[in-house]
Image: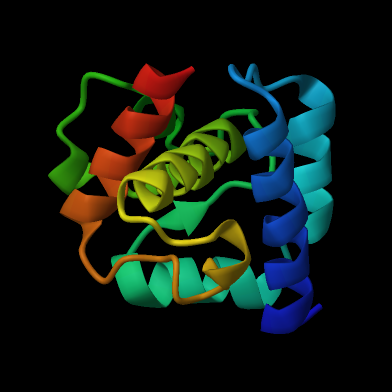
Length: 129
């Protein structure tokens, strides 16, 4: 899969967000995301933000770090598929505020260069549910 393919997935996801007032992430949504994510997406997140996207919700060797929501974001090394979905939803909500059409939200341009913005978008996605 390449950036264009993942961007196509994002356009479909953002259209789905548009069609539904409130979005609840189901296991099926997580599985669809995991199928859409490939090594290039994981690498881009790791390279740009220094974070590793876990491709399942199960704990890794650093379960405490991965699952501890109280841990300061500056020290976090992992993000779960659910957090990544929240990021994408937060990005969608921010695009509405900024008047950016969802079909212009392409990968990897939607990924911020700073972790602070990334965590803010996750929080926005959580609050927007």
